[in-house]
Image (cartoon, rainbow over all chains, first blue to last red; front, side, top):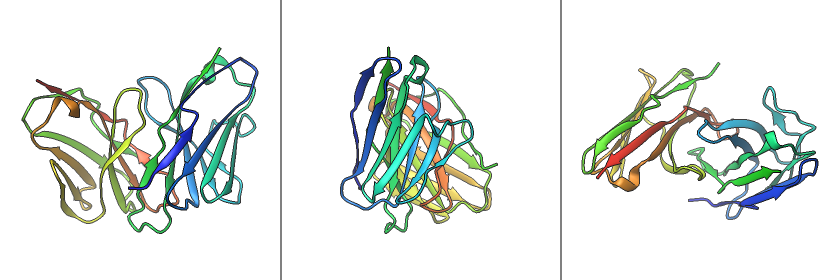
Length: 117
Length: 111
């Protein structure tokens, strides 16, 4: 199967600082990547859809100025949590689809645990 | 609004038994159907996908799809304690639209 890599897997930052999370498709080109957030024991929540070369589409209730998404190439999307606060502490997961795969299978990265102190 | 429904569980089965996980979806335009397994604190991992009516088998796993009933299921034969996890059903109409996830069913396989 296709491989999606996220970095860092864990990060701790101080309140008020910004944190960048990278999502890479290692062996395929991904025109579309998705960013999810998951709080402990809760369901996955879609934050935004990231399209290569264009602006991300954010889900209702997700602040686009706080969660900056850049998808500058077919293999890399980044999520930057700006002015992070403790309530932003969560598990952030990206996923990507190989546009050449007719099954439309979506593969997940390993996830990134963010702790804001 | 597109919805995917799953029983939250927990579903408890003895080791060696068949675990049956069910899922219904609301959007008749859905084309691809996925089952993911998520261990606590980890990212979802793909188990199977199916997009044609009928059964699809892969090892101990069988996915079943009935588009007329808008129903997808996953059977796990010879369940093992290592199968204990949350199983997420997800559907999409195209690869460029987000997956719509169910809330997941927690499976517990008891040794």
